[in-house]
Length: 90
Image (cartoon, rainbow, N blue to C red; front, side, top):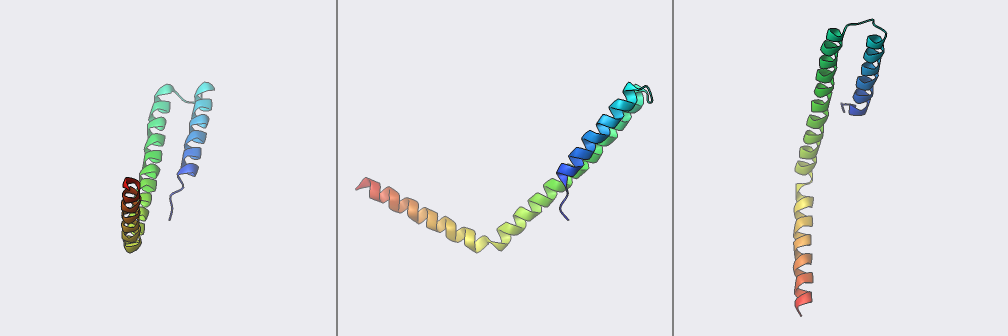
């Protein structure tokens, strides 16, 4: 399943806004704000790592399944470059 980093970031900011409002209203002390902010940062970091890992695994899967195509394109690009370079020298 694809981690929804955008939604996790929106939730993070929403929770921060709620936390700030509670602090401004005097409902929670500053020490608790610090603790809860650290927890929110950890939650977002977990989601970010999951998104990065998913992206990395997706790229690795794509590269392994498309290896022949990529090699063919690289050879074609190399031959085209050599041909263009050769035609410029004459």
